[in-house]
Length: 256
Image (cartoon, rainbow, N blue to C red; front, side):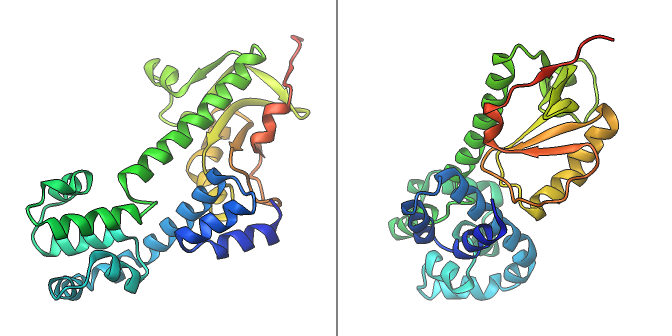
């Protein structure tokens, strides 16, 4: 994706209605959900402790009649996290909180249960349904990669295979049993990412996973299934691709 288009999407994705608006323009729902999730998650990391420091004030506001969703809107913060801060301030343990999130009807107060359902429905990053969508995207990407490799007769080991053998704790999704030629380059592994590969995401993945993979196994490819930002600077021996890789053929390396 070109930088200008990426910035338009990233800066424009601030609410659920923004996702719907871009979807109507023809953008893929997985891409929009992924970009929105990455943007919100980064914002939360930067501001979590600042917002949490106001939990006493938020509890007072809630007890005076403001709803969880109204307070979340005021602080521009995910509703479920606002609810968690308020309920913890009110003495409810985190384990019990997540039980309530999954089943608001267990609450005796029907109005509070209604508030919880409303807040959960408006949180597409931290709700149970959002977690399921994120898991589904991850499995979707891994399944695409396995089908692509299987369809070309490329043998590989999965993360589970490597761990069961007592191998490295840093394991790519697909470690090839024999290297192959990818776009004229000899590669040894493929990594599946259901995220969007912008600069922040790619740098984080490179530091935590991709560079260590090259040190352990050699050059490899990371696939961002919902897309990546053109021009991201790749570390040595790391190559980047998107769903277009499904149209590419890998070359086998002849024995010398």
